[in-house]
Length: 407
Ligand SMILES: [Zn+2]
Image 1 (cartoon, rainbow, N blue to C red):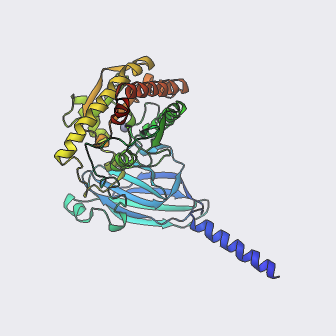
Image 2: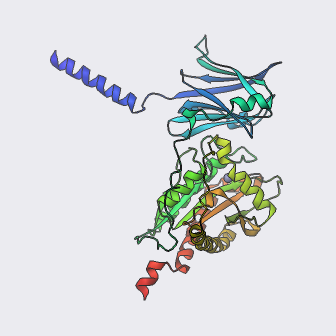
Image 3: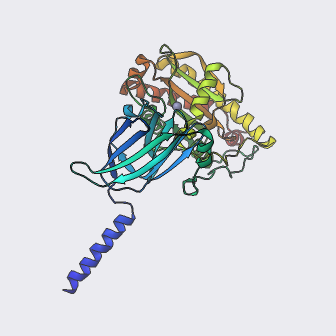
């Protein structure tokens, strides 16, 4: 009898540990319906389980943010892109581990008149209902803002890392390279002509790049993300700085107003853009945090002192050298833009001490580019091209510690 009790207590402990470790089943969102009524726009989410949720609004641009525990979204992303009534479109996905988010873009100021969870009824499981009604800007601004609980706890990771322009990179057996797949989670990035999402495409290419680099045996690769999760631009920069990376490569796929635009291009940091298109692109890529509803109010610009300026000049030169090494390799893979190396003010490239480049693989708005980029053959060719360019870059740049031992 005692043994039975013991094993029962043990079972309870195991179950309790599993629950506290977050092993509880995730709620699944099976359907999202948006209906236009005469005085309101109604959102209904069909859920398998009861969930806690919180709602807040943000201005400029007008957005409604709904936070949930981590959920699985069995929703075709295409349903989120057509607007109706007060809604321009919406996005959903992982904001960070354990925390899912939906962001509704509004065409004009709107208040959340009702928000409630309906219990199961007949065939239906739980339903979350949100009613949006039009309001004035002044009233909207009064209630808009981040609630204390939603304030990001990602408070400037990496911002506190000192910059010493005279310091040599640490001596390491292998070079450290950060691969940064753009977007993720609640931020899907651009959408391709056939519906492929930038966040998914760039993740699969980035994983192929990681494998190609690791196969050489010469590099340690750090991924900023290797799952479908959102990461703020600042957090991406911090990944490179914390790793004291020798090179940071952010990987994206562009979408242009013109369907004809094709080919890859590579970007490095500059406060002044090289051309109008580079400027448009940087503006679009810098929107990632806004898209995901990240609090930017306490964002400090890390490019402040002269010391940082010095470090950054060196870093920018190195980034430009890598860009030059990459262009001919991209040409071997396929289409490259005429002006393949461009400059603009990309936030994600702002680490003062890590040479950083942003690679746009091609255009999701072009059907030829899109279908090619989805093939395994193209992905491995691109990964190989990047790996060769990385080799060439490190061979040509004589690092300080190497130079010392050569003397
Ligand atoms: Zn992008």
